[in-house]
Image 1 (cartoon, rainbow, N blue to C red):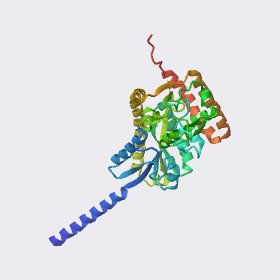
Image 2: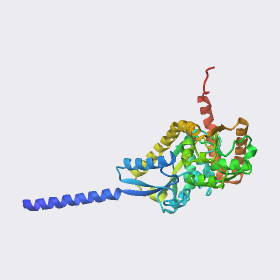
Image 3: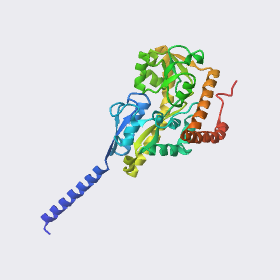
Image 4: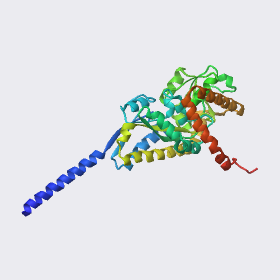
Length: 355
């Protein structure tokens, strides 16, 4: 073969190899849409959603991307479930607490009244059977729930006036979330679940009399202090709150093992990062609520907390008796807590031992 023919053959071969390599690389590229229940500017919940998508992009070298979509851009804020289930979008950044209309038992996977801190909660979900139950429930709708978000204790209500006695709650209209809403209903409160961005207009127009949403960093952002000046602690209904990345199962199954692992690793990193961030930023935000916005930081009395707790236990027993799935999840959660208590009690410390 002549030198010229050899060069031509080599060039053709290299071009073909380059084309195949480029085609293979392009075939690996995956672009997903990710609906978010919270806007990108919402502290912790929205911030972490954006950070999560950035981490996936970085870890995949730019070959696997999740495009963040603000609430309402694809579907309404709290309605990611159906869109993911149908495959209209690949994923949604949300919380199981927004899916309780499908299965009330899903509330356990976000927050439980008078529940544990993050260590015990994530231990139950990730290693104590919670994850398997949640996956089985969501799988009926072609959804894989990935527990990607966690935030610290919340406050338990913004009120227009001081609540001296719990009888004042009776007849009140209030935005309330999750299992805590069931407790408030037992105390005569009419509750409704509103997306974060819908709460202030509802307060302003008198559609609701009071609200709970989250914690100082977020609540300041939503401006509740402009209408309600009394903010109550502790967050007996949400000592820790866990969020989800809801993923369409067929889309997840089509991913390479590498991309599936990237989702898992980024997910668990986000859960810990978001929790630590809430704990770091809220002390200063709590002070700012009072000094800058004139908010009265209040605390429920012990006898009032006892009423909330008893109402929760009554609700738990009542709902478990009439809903087999609720009972199954409750039994798993309570069984883990009972087992964990031996360890937790052995490791517990008082705030101080100095006199």
